[in-house]
Amino acid sequence: MTDPHTAKPRLTKDNLTSLQTHILAEEQEYPGATGDFSWILSAITLAGKAIANKVRRAGIEDVLGSLGTQNITGDTQQKLDVISNEIIMRCLGDRANVGVLASEEGDTPVILRSSAEGGHYAVIFDPLDGSSNLDVSVGVGTIFSILRTADLKSEAPEDLILQPGTLQVAAGYVLYGSSVVCMLTTGHGVDMFVLDQSIGAFVLVKPKLTIPSTKKIYSINEAYYDDFPDGYQRYLNWAHANGYSGRYIGSMVADIHRTLLMGGVFMYPPTKAHPQGKLRLMYEANPMAMIVEQAGGKALAEKQRILEIQPTGLHQRTSVLIGSPAEVDHVLEHLGSDS
Ligand code: P6P
Image (cartoon, rainbow, N blue to C red; front, side, top):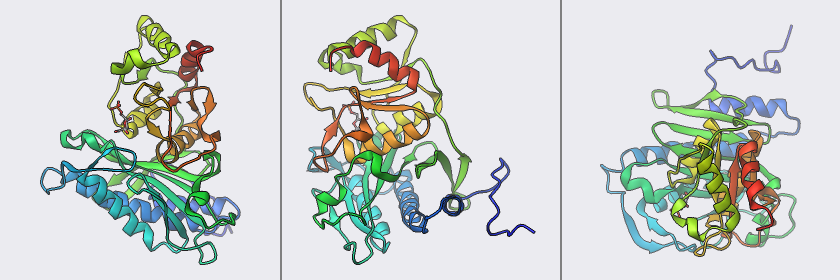
């Protein structure tokens, strides 16, 4: 008689599987899992539900518009940036295994508890990516990356988190769009969940999602065409001549989500304004790179694998070339000796 507690869960399209159930099932499947992830992920999804509620009521409650302040990376802070940041800090703060929190909205990482006190993980996040689009109801999102810190001897905040993306133990995003979507990987493929408002739970809709290998869609802000390195200009000229469509939302979470589901390539190359690229390595590029690679895609900074970049600062920027393997290769073919 099979023990019902150890039998491998059978995921069928008829199952109603919540994110928590799915993570617990995954943890049973992988030796050594201690339930740590489900504890942290339940805090992140709780924050996602609370932020989704705020975003959905943005036009009703006085949470739109900017605060007139800038964060350390020079971005104008929207009211909801700060509100979302506070929600995430409050949800994660009481998770006893979280030692470090680091946010796009915070100058430096926050140490909650040392490794000796049980703080074994760091959560690094962009609380509301794309928030400048909020006033016009364009999809925005929370991006998060989870690193282990237990094995590190240093207690210096930055040392604890400046690890290459290959060491992320989990990554994901919550997209606040026409539906609220959570995309998650713990290193064993990518799973997509949608918030069912009627029961207040993220339910599994696409287990082990894979990115289409090819699709004639490129996603880039072509306004900067004249600023891009020659190779990107050569690629764009080739794409224009080969029947490609341009799709650019200006919100990384929404652009990456479309690329994951439909295929294509998303790029933010170096420009005069951002010679290193605009997007942030630790809490935008790394988590997205882990998700896309786990879904069978490619994620590069020029020609280097994003996940292999050794970070030197919490807010450092990088160029980004992410998407379907065949589409990333088409861009690489045109970069030639540029970089
Ligand atoms: P641009 C949003 O401000 C963001 O950080 C990303 O979400 C997005 O991909 C990018 O900047 C858009 O930048 O220069 O095209 O407006």
